[in-house]
Image 1 (tube, rainbow, N blue to C red):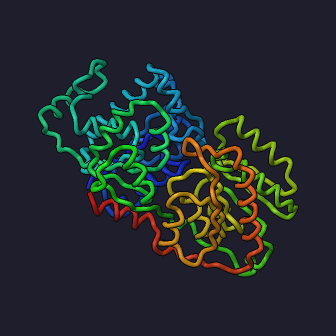
Image 2: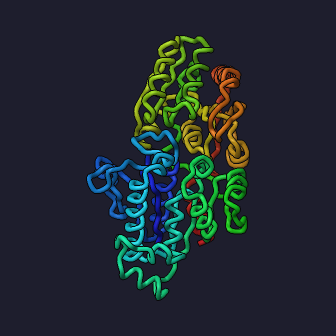
Image 3: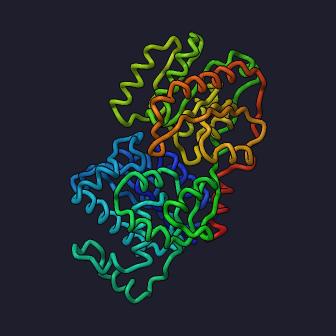
Length: 424
């Protein structure tokens, strides 16, 4: 089968990017021919040298805008969709650039299946290109090949099946950003299949976008067991369990500021907290950094790293903490568990059900979330209570001397890839 995967962001650095990259890896191992369309910056290309990748390079003289982030705070330089919506010239350039690349690759590659990540604007454009002719009929700027117009009009191009994968941040953008909502909704409804990470996500998307549940499939997430595995020795597990780890964007909505305040509540000089991830908003980062300077514990800020490097860090730590206020289905706790870490995590919708069904013999402590507004903004009045609950769960994990050997045999990217292809 010929599979074309498409994402409007980098094919790394975020959960959705890793999801795409892992599916591409697994499809390749299963013998499928592939192409990928994605956004990058010039300095990313050296790392992504796979010929299957068709890069759209942002922040260049030809495309002088930043990559649009599905989250308002990304772990790399980005523009918000809400800001892009206010700049008609930039938005049209963004749309025309992706349209042109999508049509170019479809023409040359002739995919049987197109998998689009995020139920948002780019996925809607792909659907419109493949299922309608409105885009090619309105080709005033002649950015699209005239040959493609003829092919579409004559219907001599075999129409590929188009799947969309929901990553939760797309639903947030749809709710909060007034950007071509009717166009997005109309075309997302035309997808041949829509893949979700949890039942809760499916229910929310169905309500927002008025989707046909018969097209939906819940597949969950995976992790790469070749990279993430437990290399700890028994003697290490008997040491004081005071090495804590957070991996993700350094942002308030990810609960990082609350995590540091919770650590400060514990007032424990023996605790070491390592925070690994990229910086999005500089002002937020400065606030988080200033709070860390008040701590009796040692708090280290470490930049982003490769998955292989990350696996080594998981193995150096005892407890992984994810205090985020909103996630789709986070994969970093699974990676941490696979490397022998206990986990403290916000009680995010759908996560407990997924872990209960797929993870055995793991130490996972859930922290009740504060009330939220706008999907992922925590109520200021409730933050202190949340931080106290978080501190208590961290303390419980530190004091728990039991040795856990999590069984994650039901979870793998290979299983996810097979599930996706089972409906193709």
